[in-house]
Length: 175
View 1 (cartoon, rainbow, N blue to C red):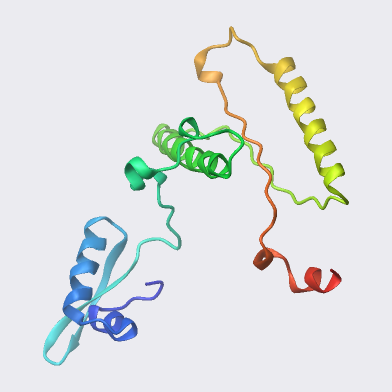
View 2 (tube, one colour; view 1 turned 120 degrees about the horizontal axis):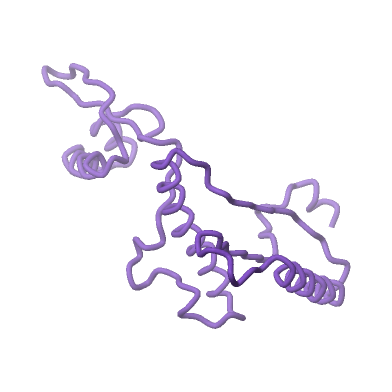
């Protein structure tokens, strides 16, 4: 619903009856996911036009209830743990961003995103060990157990293979 539409236009695009679409559009509107942006006359009736209220949405992992990924409920060496970490980041940063915005203050944060191509599995293992040692050294250098609780930060470092569809055509040809 990037562009305004009605229950009729959405229903036609999806092959679903207008009445069923209207029910769902009302539910989306009740939750603030779409907003009414106009009304138009059609066949003697007024047709409501609605549009998405944002260009993108982030679904909180908590929407999954007890199925939501949580690091404390999984093995640290598993793929599930790797999926649970960003879920926790979404949960915590969303909450903190709202509090910071309400207070009119910026939220202290840091994000690093890079790609690395390893020549071998041995290089990947060596990099992992070096990174682990560097993080341990930096943590030991800057961690202050006596600092006030408000200064606590969480550091998450993750690595995973890049999926084939995220690799450019040019990179694929080089392989």
